[in-house]
Image (cartoon, rainbow, N blue to C red; front, side, top):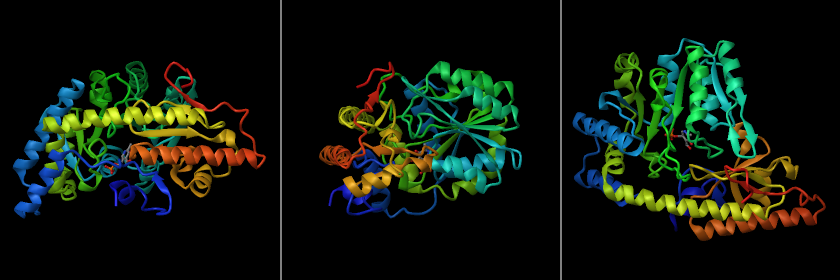
Length: 394
Ligand SMILES: Cc1ncc(COP(=O)(O)O)c(C=O)c1O
């Protein structure tokens, strides 16, 4: 059975699974070798301090060489995963009960975790322009003026696939600085940059952003090892390191030794970098295939993915009560439901599939829409397709 069928079909085995944010590709050889080495040697115990020191250095090196972001290895902390890191930031770096601004649409746990921890969420819908999704910085600033203390940035953005530009990040920094608020920047998708423009870590924009941000990153998305449990928090603000030191040992308990070994192999090994470069070429080509297919899907629109392997498809013109359920039952393609991201009427397609499977999924979606037209519900007057950053329809 292929890794695709094993990984992505678990929810509805009779469908093509394109919902969860996981690639249907085997990880880089150095990463699986590092994990295998630990298993073969029979060392499946706790983390050892030398490995953690090495992983701090690997992370700092990766951030420096990939994004020209200078991070001291001492500023790197470990958590099992990004969402646990988010919860840790809410618990230890925010006043009890302080409201949190989450721009929408948003990766579901970014919306739900604060409420679980007693922090009200102020949702600020983004704006869809012809050149793609934009944060509503004025709306975010109004929420900060109303008492919110933290802005949750997801950059690159899941689900829209935007990679925010320096002017956009600077505009957010202006708003956050004016209200002396903080930013949690989830940059787990940063290595999956398809745009050709470099990823700019938010904390690296200027001294202000370094001083008000905690960044979360991980090898988990780019090297497809989310199950190995090792994410990193970057404490670029001077006062944050000592706060983290008081609780770091607790969070280390959820960090897997295998994940630490995989992280070093992913960030350090030249073959892992080559693997990532090849994977990005593959994802770019798959993104092109999605754009071409969607241009033949009247009533389905969106923007080209700049980063991640996710396509955010606006199906509101189809006037379906539940587009994800429609594509699941009529096309046999299991997509993520936009409602989970506070984006009803949308679906999110994972295009990091084996190419024949992706082609089959796209063809089945297009065929199901032809069927919809045949049934009298006719979206064919609504132009479909994905626009690129210039607003041109692909
Ligand atoms: C933006 C974003 N953050 C966090 C996660 C989850 O990461 P983790 O499994 O490390 O918590 C995902 C997974 O899809 C994601 O897309």
